[in-house]
Image (tube, rainbow, N blue to C red; front, side, top):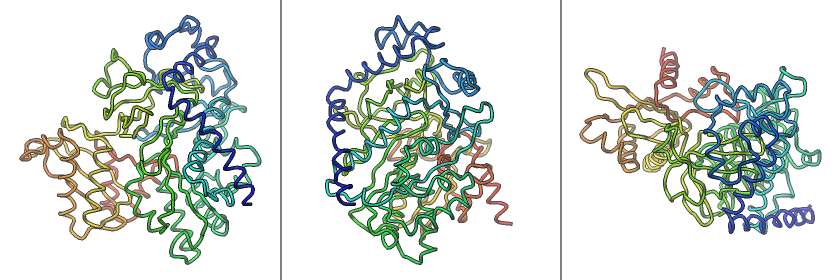
Length: 507
């Protein structure tokens, strides 16, 4: 196995030269991809409608048609799901990645072409390992198995040829046969729909394997890990899998989970690698072990535009390309892809932490914030404030959500938090004060509104018993790796639903 490990590691690291090329020539690579995308799709329905043949510059491309969202492209995707061809992209698309999003109960179905599978998603998966092998030459990762927390898979009944599942399921279903020998559990378990039964089967199927690396959303990975420890009677995962060396994570901020993973995997040699992968495409990989920022991957068949968040909602706002972005500003990402998405607003916000090469951090969602009072509180503010408060009080958060308390005749507004702790702080009032003070440090608009309680009063915190968020997500049919607890909301929908559960639990 060591010979195989050395050979595979060497093959993986050959990709590093190509990565260094797009890091050195980012603007040329992006313009080349835009030209490639437009030329490839010029005879599609959209290519003809917007006259792709006559587009010869990024500026003309941006002027040709407006920014899209899922609602605007949904009618075309529904036609594709029924079997119509050559609408958004010329190749035959039979796979659709189902995404629930974080702010809507409705599902989205993102087309996944053969090109986006191979040139984007699978390329990103291989690049994760290439970067890891390059950063850790002594790795033995290929001597054992990869534990992958997959999603669910169903057949789309609208057309016998069209299938859908969450992105991880689509990827697992289309992996080459040889890949099955490198990963666990087997596909029959990995693609189960019912998550409670799935976790149980995954635990039994993997606890006796030689797992060297894990990929998955932190929440569900923790649930699986704790179940395995219950079944084996071990105190940590290294007693179960002594060769475990890598955890690949994404989708949610890892900071609130870091302490729990350090306890489950008590090794300073454990490597944590963050990725930015969504149904719409694979966007970023953490390429430095000492830096949590992610390298923006520029040769995956995606052309990027960036909309300054202060212009969000303005239909006449100008989008920026990579040559125009600035450090430490919030941008909404707009993509055009080899899966047939054109000037598509994916709903995430990022900021650039480095411009040579281009590295980013995810700051939140365009619709995932609290701005009921002009405070413009985003996920990044909340995560950093919570991290500081938990560190100071020696506590651990399992899940949380927050939203506004609206103004009333007698009361000013505020923010209401529901938090489920893994380890509760001894002094809740001190925790609230620390959260409040750190939010002020993170956000000057919040600080201004909190001055002498003029607009916002001190945060209101509800302690949620263990299992509250699990019960809530289960009631909405949202158990699974692709579903995430909405952290911030600009209305009280999620708060009110959870508060009803708290009331029922108290009776």
